[in-house]
Image 1 (cartoon, rainbow, N blue to C red):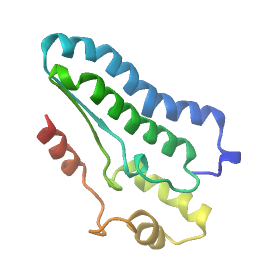
Image 2: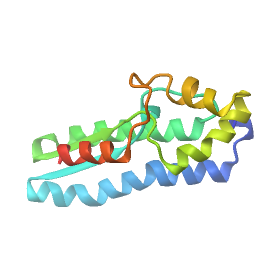
Image 3: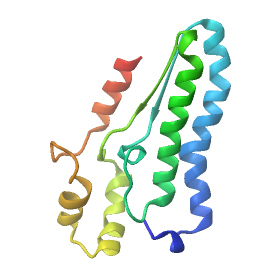
Length: 144
């Protein structure tokens, strides 16, 4: 969590590799087998950041927007081969990663922990609750 001018280039590269490039390589390897079988399911997990942006998260937002675009492209390329390609873009899921980002967001925005949780992380979530890992998993199973 940092403005673009302060964000380390090596961290940017790692975020791209983990969140975007790995998905592209996986799809490149899997799609020929799925097309040959006439069936397949690809489900990517992006985040709300695949749809909207947040300040001080340029690399992550860029990767997740890219993942959504990749998903749409491969869905079009495989639509007539029995393969579906979906991208789950939940709001904030309560994970150790999200919990660990709270102090950085507090510092970057000058907010308390409660303000970060209520006014930043959960501001756009209608339920005002974090999504659970189990809810994301249930949606993935449904899409399969």
